[in-house]
Length: 333
Ligand code: SF4
Image 1: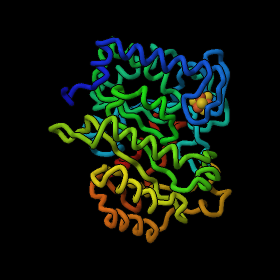
Image 2: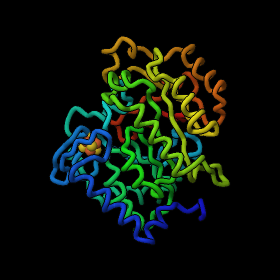
Image 3: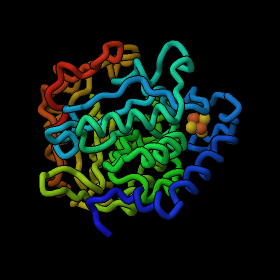
């Protein structure tokens, strides 16, 4: 099987993509799409923890030049930011769209429109379709993907997730997603509950990262150093070791594999409700960040990217603007 052709094209040809779309859509009737297991009927406009109904909601989309170099390349990553979230991170850097003050139901769009956005980004030359916060819209994405493939979509899909995913849903994405881009946010469930309202985050995120690795394997690049398949794990370092970086790096090294591509991020700045919390109310200091970089060496994690310590000075997306990332040059590099 060629790695240059997204596997979802093969699934489309055999009818398997349609089958998966049907299976995923059926979950929405008693929603267990993510570990919240709200069991509400999203097809009947009921709303669960993620505040999202049946139709997809996109806050913004753009050609993004600030992702990891293997995703952005020269032509950019075709990034689609979904509204709402299944976590409640008090420090969320994208809180304007993930935890909006007002309901975003008026922004719901048709599956056809979501497919058209994918096609538009492809026609702009993007290397991939980068689905940001897709977990609570996984079913809707696959339904739209089927339409997009009919219209000619043929670039890899990037699943850019907080890792609070259901294993069952993830298994239905096998062969559909080319590149998994999961966060590893915490290594302590007390912290994941206190700061993101998810008491089982550690177990869930570790299980899904292992499943992602099983599905797509290590990162594969094309001749132009653009990612075509594989796993890239992101880790945002938090002040006062809230992220439990050492334990997460140890897990990645020992259980996912030392060859795993890792993107270590220093861009944290207190935003949203972080200032209400003593431990999160300041940026990361240089000493804390250096310590994490030393652990990378200690655990033999050599592949990937580390942000410069000063990254928080230029990573300030504003989703109230048409171009949220206008001033950014590069997030990771
Ligand atoms: S996707 Fe939303 S409604 Fe479904 S289980 Fe998760 S939080 Fe609940």
